[in-house]
Length: 428
Image 1: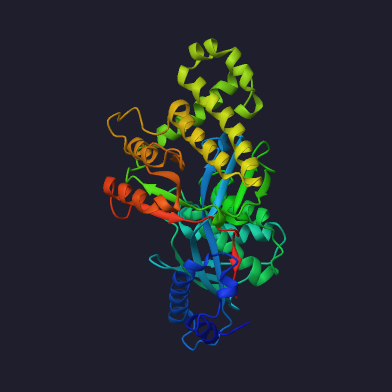
Image 2 (image 1 turned 180 degrees about the vertical axis):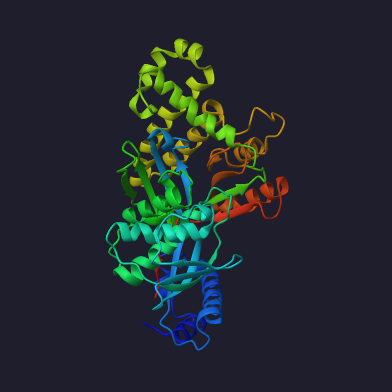
């Protein structure tokens, strides 16, 4: 267990390439050395001026949804991937039974490990996530204990890349490694993180974000039983496919879109209720087609279309999984495009009908199709209505694609990512 001063020396001398290779491609090493140097400097300033404490380095990735747009809330299937944008941290045990986490740009979170009850006043604050992770470990019989940590994140808040889930998995990975010898599996760690967000943070999220951040790589998740989702990791080397994963921020605001998001779930569930069921996973596509006229009259035509999107997305997730498993990236891209068109045509979450002239996602998708047709793939990303699109761009077209997107939006609109093969990770 190296002391902080030794860790800082290893970073200065770029002596962690072998460790970094498990999570990062070589072109990202320079950035990671700089970032870990910054968090160890921050740790030294706040917790260890002498540099003698045993310190460990950790990372947890953000995630991107690849297939299964708006399916998880009706117990559907999702294909997701962890990404190269991550949150990093330097952490060390303490003997005070207190957790202190200083995240760059935010106040310090302090949690007494002797009081892991739900604090309603902390709902919506990161300190509640920390307390929830600790409580989740304790409830499952795992060890908890004090530690100090300095962290910094490159997972963009509000981008659909799951910054909160990445933070949760980082905290869980630190606790898992420092006090439990890594005994908590990535799947169980994701469930603990979801518990923290649902119960302590008080956000009723599903398990998609936490699972993708924790497991790493491409993962297919079947939510037929949300209490025990089936997770399958895809054996595919994204670095070898000759493409870059791009997330384009169209700069639209999510602030007044709550009703739009809620309507998708409520309309899907209204179709299920017509058949006496709770969610669409309990209904078949043929049932909906056979009763389309009655459903349109009883609920709405849009609700029927959104139900058909749900069934189509579940099928596409399986096809994407099979294509990646077979190394067939061309079929995978074709299915990604199908997914995007279904979101646009049937799920109708590319723009809000309340503001029909505001369509930045539509514009980004149209220009993407013009540039990438026959070569790449493009689709709405995440909740939709505003925010981001996703594109798989051949590397020889990347410069032209980025230039076009920056001309549409701004110089900070484009994020070029890679798929990270591992989830939460300790490097030292």
